Image 1 (spheres, rainbow, N blue to C red):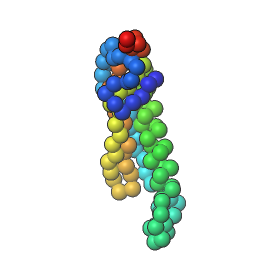
Image 2 (cartoon, rainbow, N blue to C red):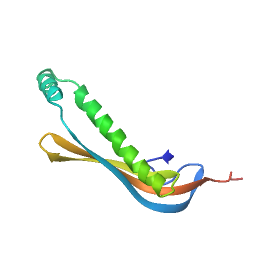
Image 3 (tube, rainbow, N blue to C red):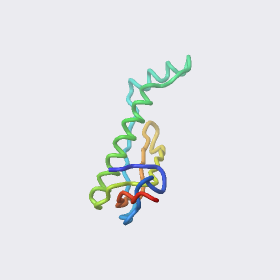
Length: 110
């Protein structure tokens, strides 16, 4: 599966648009992460627990989006975007979306 955040895939032509695909996950903060984040806020720096949480959420949302693309018979997803939103205090949603397409290798131009 080819996944890009552009409207086209270099070297390929879009033969068919299969539709919008999306994936999301809602993740809650872990109490241990909150304690460590609170301490880190005092001295500054990266909140690694939250960085890992967001990376896991992005991966899961993308996997769900790609599963929809496979169900539609696509072999690529173009215009991929990610969005986040707060659901409640301590929980956030990660949302991935794009356009499922069927692509074919473009013939070499002369």
